[in-house]
Image (cartoon, rainbow, N blue to C red; front, side, top):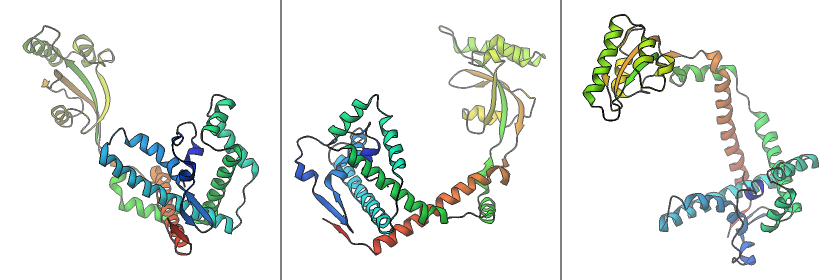
Length: 316
């Protein structure tokens, strides 16, 4: 669905090099029924891919990646032209106002009309060609909507069955609500001196001092002003040693001193939620969208494959 993608995103793609001969740009590389695919169309779609790949690959590897991308682009263009050919065969029509709206969307991406027109010229195209492209895009979209999307249905039974067989996808992990005191060596301070401050803080806690007040007094963590409140934490989100202690503590209990690369920690658990599976009513819409997407992809592939079997396709 990406034929002439440049014309959909004129503001971010660049034009073919001026040294390329015009006859080479307009060389026909494939014929699909009554539609043709030119080298220029492939170049247009390859340009942004090349711009991305050249930052990650070089030499032969870059050439191989671009060659793979070219094959993918050609396949996409073939499918796109099959759909366009079918839309014409079924006499799919779109309103001129819809095309006008799409053109306006493109123009609005530019700082001015002059800038838009400058890019049009740089791309060796015209407003009339741009309108033709969007008209084709809209026809293809309408074809897909009529022949595939509107015919899809996901039933409540399918949603329930998916929910029952994919429980782990909707499981919320165990969480603990944590308050934390972090004490780390100051500049010029030894590990032992920082540890002694942590021991002093722990002593005050063991003597009944309020955890939040001790955190405000001693903690060097970013959350010290909030009494060391970290909020709810899932298993695996913290440093391994701290994580193990957190989920081993009962609600209301305070840990001993835990040393990490950062410093010394004292934590308290103020609440705990067990691992639970979200109820069906909370996730049914997500499941419905997922199943609809899967059905669409399957039907779309079947539809295009059927068009291929009954089409004339010639790759030059």
